Length: 272
Image (tube, rainbow, N blue to C red):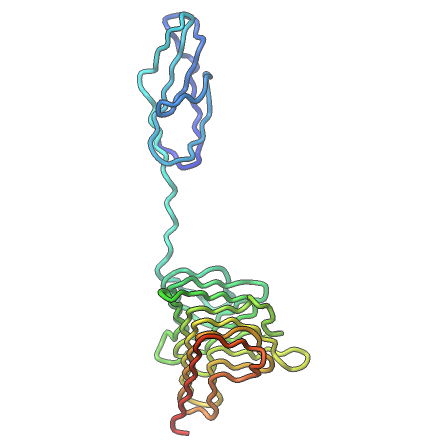
């Protein structure tokens, strides 16, 4: 008999005899361990393996006899759901957790307000366009398993746009750790959202983040935002290069930023 983990089996000794003598005892054991004294019983198998279920009866003389042989019950552990090696994501709204080693974004994707997208360590994301965050983005790699965000082609991608409505105001709403944002066309992280005063309210936590921007036209920056920016920036590296008219490492009001560790910004203009 083969069952799945957590399934139950009904056992019955009804109809057992002992040479016409009255039966006074019914003993069920599993792997030699007494379980119950009853003609019938139900048992839930919560461990994987093969178990020997034996049944004995005792008659009015006090003599016990066993059934011909044990019933063998094999309990199979559930097969774990494999993590896909490649996850293809269509354009539109996204949330949940990405853990596949490779994630291919097939168009513009948005984390809607009130929802969360978490990206696990070691994931490489190939962008054909950009990522907009109106909800919560948690991208937490490790030193040994950084998260890489890069273009899926030789053409730079659009980067991360944050808070297109009222901005990002929660301290835990935008967190990037051990992340490489590579091959961006204009802004690595861009916060265009405005409030009634015309400024974005943008709170971010960046730790060990690398941003590279290759600018071909207009204004470009590793991090670009309007108005006050709050949060922590630690051990970041920003490289902006190209022929754009205005090149910045970080553009915005930095008064409320807590800079920690070693931060490097390199801006190289060519042909302008």
